[in-house]
Image (cartoon, rainbow, N blue to C red):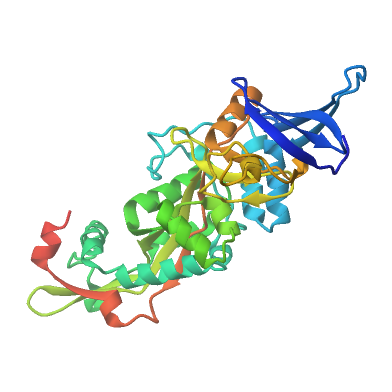
Amino acid sequence: MAEDYKVLVTNLSYHSDGTITVTGTKQGIKESFSLKCTAEQLCKSTLTPKNSSNKTVTTKSLFKLSDIPSVMRAKGWHMAAYLNEKWLNDESLEMTAAEKGDWSKIRPNLILYKPNIFNHHWLKNFERYNDALDDIKTNITSKASRRLVLKYLKRDGAFNSSNLKGLSFSSESNYRELKTINSGNVNELKKLQTFHENWQCQNLPIDNGLNDKLDTYIRSGFKVDDLWSTFGSFAIYACIGDYKVIPQRNNYFMIYIESIVCYAIDSYEFITPPDDYLGHWSRDEFDFNLIFKKNINNLNSHRHSRTGEFRGSFNPNNLLYPVYNSHYQEYRKKYKKGRDMVVWTKPEIISMEDMSNEFKTFIVTKSDINSSL
């Protein structure tokens, strides 16, 4: 089969075995072009000359699931390519739908912690991450957060009279050990989980749901960036970092938040259901098309809008195929590969110094403290 050729499409039919048969004309000679979709090779093409005496059949691979990382790298989505390649090449490790989301209890061997690449310095390249940090900083002392903050501080002994030396209590110990976590050692990962369970009081989803995704897609000029292709929908979490408790008159206390600790967590898996749409792909290209996501490929774009007949020339090498979670599950079954992961970015200490007092201080009474969870 030539590297580059065009077929004038005259007929398209789908078969129960997953084959698509396209009939058309190539340089005036009737030929049949067939496509077979599998997990390993989402599109394998065979061009057979009409002349039955010619026994030569040429096969060309148009697109495989394992081509996706190279497409990602070509588009500058290096983090996404790293995770996708790791999933495709590592031995199968499967996350269940039931354990997804309970990050403090998730099996540590599912956690991928690469602080040198998945960190605040990478995340801050994206405007919506920075916007999320601003939102978290303005809500860290909101009514919803205060009950958790009081719970954590009470547990930390912040309101014990014996600890209120110098008329205040300060603590920086809760996150200090995080600075030494630089590997995927199970014991170190458990420290991350314990910190998350003991101090997390805010979370903010990013690109969560269809409307948020469309908004991001439109605002970016109909482009997909490395953050989206890496995480899709994910969340930013915030924990209390440095704080002070300053006793006031009449059994009141002022809570002063000096810093917070922020990080992102996202699961990298292809759990079904749901059978999520992951874009249209070829060996060289990508398109995110929610309107045509259920199409087997983009051949239907060659139909006449009124008559439904095919028109114009069609280059098989330019076909884009929709990829779904189910393709990755088929790949896992066939090759015993597919490592599900919980990607945990390096916790970053964020100062509250630039925030006005209304966002980093609040007053509580002993009654409030005693009634905290």
